[in-house]
Each structure stands twice: as structure tokens, then as C-alpha cells.
Image (cartoon, rainbow over all chains, first blue to last red; front, side):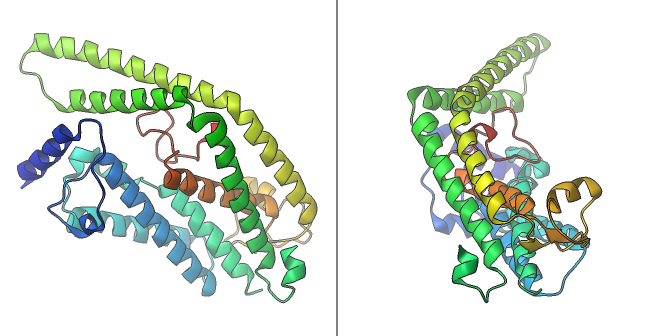
Length: 126
Length: 192
């Protein structure tokens, strides 16, 4: 299975010729699709931002206080990212720089998005 | 301004700061596009960095059968890495020259917002920040509630979140192979 995924990645690299392949939305849920490193990184980045937005607005609307919720958000968002690339896309993370590289895509920006929406949302309750 | 228009809304101050941050981010990216991104030098440097980092990745992942080829491959990798570092440095230098204009715009906007929200809490943090963060988050505020958030801190958070995503959306974020990318990639500081 890993050899097949690696072969799929290498084939994609060879056919690239320096150009990004056109991105289709159906690719997002297709475990057979081949991914370019930049495209996958971008998709993971945006997924994190959406999760941060939803979590920030939700936590802001609820009476959730404490730094623990930032940790909870990090766990949830990282879990979603991991679940997406490992279980839905069935990607071999070694071809894309390992778990660390994939999990850190958009991490810092998502924390700031989460804090902004949480803080502004909380303020409306006071 | 927004507070005058929507006096009943508690969210108005926070949303005003958010709105001004968003507009500033758009203006700064427009200035950066004008002075940096559309130039041939920038495009050429970015292309060089992209090619070098892809080449480096391919070289690092392929294995060599013999010791002699391994040694020559290591030398090649070192050469490509040096070339990548040089190109990244040139890119940073190139952006730095044009970043002064953006910095001036940000300075003006921050001064304006400081006057508008002086002494007012614009948001509420969900936790008590550490002392060093409180110096910014509670800057200029009356009262002792450490969860009150000043304009400066909210503006800082908004700037990072909006600009990073805007640069990503417009395709202006720094190439992945360039130096400076890591666990906490900030929005490209030379352009913001």
C-alpha cells in the first residue's frame, strides 16, 4: 500500500514539469487522487482556518473561559487535520515531509483566528 | 465611527478594529503587489527558490548505491542548499526595501486607532494572559480586569490572522522552501 502511494506521488512529481496540476473539488474526498505538496499544504491550511473560525465563534457564544480551551482547540483541529489526510486521503506522510510538516500547516494563523473570534464574541456578552 | 452608527451593539468596537485591520491588510497587500510582487525580479527569485527546494527534496529522498556517489551527492546537496539560502536572502533584501512604505501606512493606521480607542477595552480574552502579554493586552486600559483586551492586542491578533490568510489566498505567501518558514510562520514581515 505504501509503495503504491509513493509510486503515485512520484508519478505526479514526474508529470509536473514545474506546473501545478489543476485543482478540482472532487479531489478533496478522493483517496485515489494524487497530490502536489503545495496543494495539500494549502488545503490543510484552509481546513484549519475554517475549524478555527467555527470553534472561535462557538466558544465565544458559550461561557467558556480558561486557557485550556486553546489546548482543546489545538487537539480538535490537529485531530481533524490528521484524520483528513491519514484516513480520508490515505496519504503517505513521508512523501510530504512527515506528520510534523502536515500538522503545522496554518497552525499559527489558526490560533490567532481562534483567539480573535473568541475574544470579540465574548465581549458581546458583557 | 461604527460605535456611533450602532450604539446598541457591544460588538461594535471589536468589529471596528477587525474591519480596519482587514482594510489595512488589503491596502498593504495592494501596495506590496505594486512595489514587489509584480516585478520581474521577485518572480524570478521566487521561481529560483521553488525549483531549488524541489530539487533539494528530490535529492534528499533518493538513495545512492555506493559511497563514492553518496559523497558527490552530499556535495551537490550542499551546493543547492547554499544557492537556496542565497536566493532566500536576496528575496528578503528585495522585499525589505519596499517594506518601508507599508510600515509607514501601518504606523499611521495604528496611530489613528490608538486615538479612537484610547483607554477602551474592545474585546474580552477567555483567559488571564501571562504578565509579559498583559503589557500589550492591557495597554492603556483602566481597571484591574486582566481579561480586558486593548485595541493594540486585538489589532495585533487581527493583523496576523487576516494578513497570513490574505497572502495565502492571493498567492503572495513566501515560498515553502525559503528560510523563515516553520512551526509559526508569520505573515511575510517585509510586506506587512
